[in-house]
Image 1 (cartoon, rainbow, N blue to C red):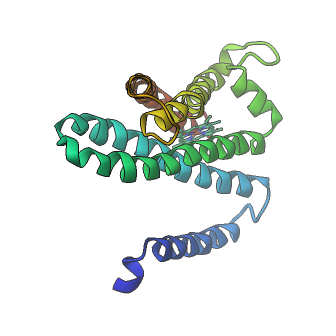
Image 2 (tube, rainbow, N blue to C red):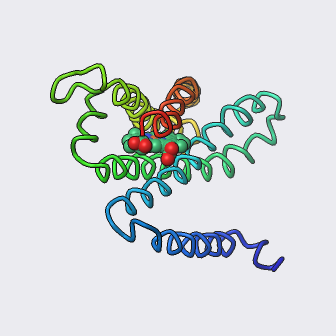
Length: 205
Ligand code: HEM
Protein backbone atom coordinates (compact mmCIF):
# COMPACT_ATOMS: atom_id res chain seq x y z
CA UNK A 1 0.00 0.00 0.00
CA UNK A 2 2.81 2.43 0.88
CA UNK A 3 4.31 1.74 -2.58
CA UNK A 4 1.04 2.75 -4.19
CA UNK A 5 0.66 5.86 -2.03
CA UNK A 6 4.22 6.96 -2.79
CA UNK A 7 3.29 7.07 -6.49
CA UNK A 8 1.12 10.12 -7.34
CA UNK A 9 -0.26 8.67 -10.58
CA UNK A 10 -1.33 5.35 -9.05
CA UNK A 11 -2.92 7.10 -6.07
CA UNK A 12 -4.97 9.29 -8.42
CA UNK A 13 -5.99 6.28 -10.54
CA UNK A 14 -7.23 4.51 -7.39
CA UNK A 15 -9.07 7.62 -6.23
CA UNK A 16 -10.84 7.83 -9.62
CA UNK A 17 -11.72 4.10 -9.42
CA UNK A 18 -13.29 4.63 -5.97
CA UNK A 19 -15.16 7.66 -7.30
CA UNK A 20 -16.49 5.67 -10.27
CA UNK A 21 -17.79 3.02 -7.85
CA UNK A 22 -19.60 5.84 -5.99
CA UNK A 23 -20.96 7.22 -9.28
CA UNK A 24 -22.27 3.74 -10.10
CA UNK A 25 -23.89 3.43 -6.66
CA UNK A 26 -25.63 6.80 -7.20
CA UNK A 27 -26.86 5.61 -10.62
CA UNK A 28 -28.91 2.95 -8.80
CA UNK A 29 -30.96 5.72 -7.13
CA UNK A 30 -34.35 7.25 -8.02
CA UNK A 31 -33.06 9.01 -11.16
CA UNK A 32 -31.30 6.04 -12.72
CA UNK A 33 -29.10 7.53 -15.43
CA UNK A 34 -31.49 10.23 -16.62
CA UNK A 35 -30.56 13.85 -17.39
CA UNK A 36 -30.62 14.81 -13.70
CA UNK A 37 -28.10 12.05 -12.98
CA UNK A 38 -25.73 13.45 -15.64
CA UNK A 39 -26.25 16.94 -14.24
CA UNK A 40 -25.03 15.55 -10.90
CA UNK A 41 -22.02 13.91 -12.58
CA UNK A 42 -21.10 17.20 -14.29
CA UNK A 43 -21.58 19.00 -10.95
CA UNK A 44 -19.12 16.54 -9.38
CA UNK A 45 -16.54 17.12 -12.15
CA UNK A 46 -17.18 20.86 -11.93
CA UNK A 47 -16.48 20.99 -8.21
CA UNK A 48 -13.36 18.77 -8.57
CA UNK A 49 -11.82 21.00 -11.26
CA UNK A 50 -12.98 24.12 -9.40
CA UNK A 51 -11.22 22.99 -6.23
CA UNK A 52 -8.04 22.22 -8.19
CA UNK A 53 -8.11 25.60 -9.96
CA UNK A 54 -8.97 27.80 -6.99
CA UNK A 55 -6.78 25.68 -4.70
CA UNK A 56 -3.80 26.54 -6.89
CA UNK A 57 -4.88 30.20 -7.10
CA UNK A 58 -4.86 30.20 -3.29
CA UNK A 59 -1.49 28.40 -3.19
CA UNK A 60 0.02 31.14 -5.40
CA UNK A 61 -1.54 33.97 -3.42
CA UNK A 62 -1.50 32.61 0.14
CA UNK A 63 1.96 31.01 -0.09
CA UNK A 64 4.22 31.40 -3.11
CA UNK A 65 3.92 35.08 -4.10
CA UNK A 66 4.06 36.20 -0.46
CA UNK A 67 7.14 34.14 0.41
CA UNK A 68 9.10 34.72 -2.85
CA UNK A 69 10.80 37.96 -1.61
CA UNK A 70 12.21 36.04 1.42
CA UNK A 71 13.83 33.32 -0.69
CA UNK A 72 17.61 33.83 -1.29
CA UNK A 73 18.35 34.67 -4.95
CA UNK A 74 20.32 31.45 -5.57
CA UNK A 75 17.33 29.35 -4.45
CA UNK A 76 14.67 31.26 -6.44
CA UNK A 77 15.19 29.19 -9.64
CA UNK A 78 13.96 26.08 -7.77
CA UNK A 79 10.57 27.82 -7.60
CA UNK A 80 10.55 29.55 -10.98
CA UNK A 81 11.98 26.63 -12.98
CA UNK A 82 10.37 23.64 -11.27
CA UNK A 83 7.40 24.52 -9.03
CA UNK A 84 5.69 27.39 -10.87
CA UNK A 85 5.59 25.85 -14.40
CA UNK A 86 4.10 22.62 -12.99
CA UNK A 87 1.58 24.51 -10.84
CA UNK A 88 0.62 26.67 -13.84
CA UNK A 89 0.03 23.57 -15.95
CA UNK A 90 -2.61 22.20 -13.56
CA UNK A 91 -3.89 25.74 -12.88
CA UNK A 92 -4.74 26.73 -16.45
CA UNK A 93 -6.14 23.36 -17.56
CA UNK A 94 -8.27 22.95 -14.43
CA UNK A 95 -9.62 26.47 -15.11
CA UNK A 96 -10.70 25.37 -18.59
CA UNK A 97 -12.31 22.13 -17.39
CA UNK A 98 -14.09 23.98 -14.53
CA UNK A 99 -15.72 26.28 -17.08
CA UNK A 100 -16.64 23.45 -19.47
CA UNK A 101 -18.14 21.31 -16.69
CA UNK A 102 -19.92 24.36 -15.20
CA UNK A 103 -21.49 25.21 -18.57
CA UNK A 104 -22.35 21.49 -18.84
CA UNK A 105 -24.24 21.65 -15.51
CA UNK A 106 -26.12 24.75 -16.71
CA UNK A 107 -26.99 23.09 -20.06
CA UNK A 108 -28.17 19.91 -18.32
CA UNK A 109 -30.44 21.98 -16.07
CA UNK A 110 -32.20 22.99 -19.30
CA UNK A 111 -32.07 25.85 -21.80
CA UNK A 112 -34.40 28.11 -19.77
CA UNK A 113 -32.11 27.87 -16.71
CA UNK A 114 -28.95 28.37 -18.83
CA UNK A 115 -30.42 31.40 -20.64
CA UNK A 116 -31.72 32.94 -17.40
CA UNK A 117 -28.40 32.50 -15.59
CA UNK A 118 -26.21 33.71 -18.46
CA UNK A 119 -28.37 36.85 -18.91
CA UNK A 120 -28.48 37.53 -15.14
CA UNK A 121 -32.20 36.75 -15.08
CA UNK A 122 -33.12 39.03 -17.99
CA UNK A 123 -33.92 36.42 -20.70
CA UNK A 124 -37.68 36.43 -21.40
CA UNK A 125 -38.20 39.60 -19.35
CA UNK A 126 -37.22 40.26 -15.75
CA UNK A 127 -39.49 39.24 -12.88
CA UNK A 128 -38.64 39.71 -9.18
CA UNK A 129 -38.78 35.92 -8.80
CA UNK A 130 -35.71 35.78 -11.10
CA UNK A 131 -33.45 37.11 -8.32
CA UNK A 132 -31.82 33.68 -7.86
CA UNK A 133 -30.81 33.61 -11.54
CA UNK A 134 -29.30 37.08 -11.19
CA UNK A 135 -27.26 36.03 -8.16
CA UNK A 136 -26.10 32.80 -9.83
CA UNK A 137 -25.38 34.67 -13.08
CA UNK A 138 -23.15 37.15 -11.25
CA UNK A 139 -21.08 34.20 -9.96
CA UNK A 140 -20.84 32.61 -13.40
CA UNK A 141 -19.74 35.89 -15.02
CA UNK A 142 -17.18 36.54 -12.27
CA UNK A 143 -15.80 33.03 -12.91
CA UNK A 144 -15.75 33.67 -16.68
CA UNK A 145 -13.77 36.89 -16.13
CA UNK A 146 -11.38 34.92 -13.89
CA UNK A 147 -11.00 32.26 -16.60
CA UNK A 148 -10.24 34.88 -19.29
CA UNK A 149 -7.73 36.39 -16.88
CA UNK A 150 -5.97 33.00 -16.53
CA UNK A 151 -5.64 32.29 -20.25
CA UNK A 152 -5.48 35.87 -21.56
CA UNK A 153 -3.27 37.63 -18.99
CA UNK A 154 -1.72 35.38 -16.31
CA UNK A 155 -0.40 32.58 -18.53
CA UNK A 156 0.96 34.74 -21.42
CA UNK A 157 2.74 36.99 -18.91
CA UNK A 158 4.03 34.10 -16.80
CA UNK A 159 5.56 32.58 -19.95
CA UNK A 160 7.63 35.77 -20.32
CA UNK A 161 8.37 36.13 -16.59
CA UNK A 162 9.54 32.50 -16.27
CA UNK A 163 11.67 32.61 -19.41
CA UNK A 164 9.53 30.04 -21.28
CA UNK A 165 9.26 32.81 -23.90
CA UNK A 166 12.40 34.85 -24.70
CA UNK A 167 12.46 38.45 -23.38
CA UNK A 168 14.89 40.95 -21.83
CA UNK A 169 15.10 41.54 -18.05
CA UNK A 170 12.91 44.66 -18.27
CA UNK A 171 10.11 42.87 -20.11
CA UNK A 172 10.38 39.96 -17.65
CA UNK A 173 9.94 42.22 -14.61
CA UNK A 174 6.99 43.99 -16.26
CA UNK A 175 5.34 40.67 -17.15
CA UNK A 176 5.82 39.35 -13.58
CA UNK A 177 4.09 42.45 -12.19
CA UNK A 178 1.19 42.17 -14.66
CA UNK A 179 0.75 38.44 -13.88
CA UNK A 180 0.76 39.15 -10.13
CA UNK A 181 -1.84 41.92 -10.48
CA UNK A 182 -4.09 39.69 -12.61
CA UNK A 183 -3.71 36.86 -10.09
CA UNK A 184 -4.64 39.29 -7.26
CA UNK A 185 -7.74 40.34 -9.25
CA UNK A 186 -8.74 36.66 -9.39
CA UNK A 187 -8.10 36.31 -5.65
CA UNK A 188 -10.35 39.34 -5.10
CA UNK A 189 -13.14 37.94 -7.29
CA UNK A 190 -12.86 34.38 -5.93
CA UNK A 191 -14.88 34.79 -2.73
CA UNK A 192 -17.88 36.64 -4.24
CA UNK A 193 -17.80 34.07 -7.08
CA UNK A 194 -17.79 31.17 -4.61
CA UNK A 195 -20.59 32.77 -2.58
CA UNK A 196 -22.81 32.59 -5.62
CA UNK A 197 -21.76 29.03 -6.56
CA UNK A 198 -22.19 27.67 -3.04
CA UNK A 199 -25.34 29.53 -1.85
CA UNK A 200 -27.55 29.18 -4.93
CA UNK A 201 -28.47 25.48 -4.78
CA UNK A 202 -29.56 25.54 -1.13
CA UNK A 203 -31.56 28.77 -1.29
CA UNK A 204 -33.04 28.68 -4.80
CA UNK A 205 -32.98 24.96 -5.67
C1 HEM B 1 -17.22 30.04 -15.74
C2 HEM B 1 -17.04 29.18 -14.78
C3 HEM B 1 -18.18 28.56 -14.03
C4 HEM B 1 -19.43 28.20 -14.47
C5 HEM B 1 -20.03 28.38 -15.85
C6 HEM B 1 -20.10 27.61 -13.33
C7 HEM B 1 -21.39 27.12 -13.33
C8 HEM B 1 -22.01 26.51 -12.27
C9 HEM B 1 -23.37 26.01 -12.26
C10 HEM B 1 -24.33 26.11 -13.43
C11 HEM B 1 -23.60 25.49 -11.04
C12 HEM B 1 -24.89 24.85 -10.58
C13 HEM B 1 -25.71 25.82 -9.81
C14 HEM B 1 -27.06 25.23 -9.55
O1 HEM B 1 -27.20 24.52 -8.58
O2 HEM B 1 -27.96 25.48 -10.36
C15 HEM B 1 -22.39 25.62 -10.27
C16 HEM B 1 -22.26 25.20 -8.96
C17 HEM B 1 -21.09 25.22 -8.26
N1 HEM B 1 -19.89 25.71 -8.70
FE1 HEM B 1 -19.58 26.67 -10.46
N2 HEM B 1 -19.24 27.59 -12.26
C18 HEM B 1 -18.05 28.16 -12.64
C19 HEM B 1 -16.93 28.30 -11.87
C20 HEM B 1 -16.74 27.74 -10.62
C21 HEM B 1 -15.52 27.80 -9.88
C22 HEM B 1 -14.24 28.47 -10.32
C23 HEM B 1 -15.71 27.12 -8.73
C24 HEM B 1 -14.67 26.94 -7.68
C25 HEM B 1 -14.62 26.00 -6.82
C26 HEM B 1 -17.08 26.64 -8.74
C27 HEM B 1 -17.68 25.90 -7.73
C28 HEM B 1 -18.98 25.52 -7.70
C29 HEM B 1 -19.61 24.90 -6.57
C30 HEM B 1 -18.95 24.52 -5.24
C31 HEM B 1 -20.94 24.71 -6.92
C32 HEM B 1 -22.03 24.20 -6.03
C33 HEM B 1 -22.40 22.78 -6.27
C34 HEM B 1 -23.63 22.42 -5.49
O3 HEM B 1 -24.06 23.16 -4.58
O4 HEM B 1 -24.20 21.40 -5.77
N3 HEM B 1 -17.66 27.03 -9.90
N4 HEM B 1 -21.43 26.25 -11.03
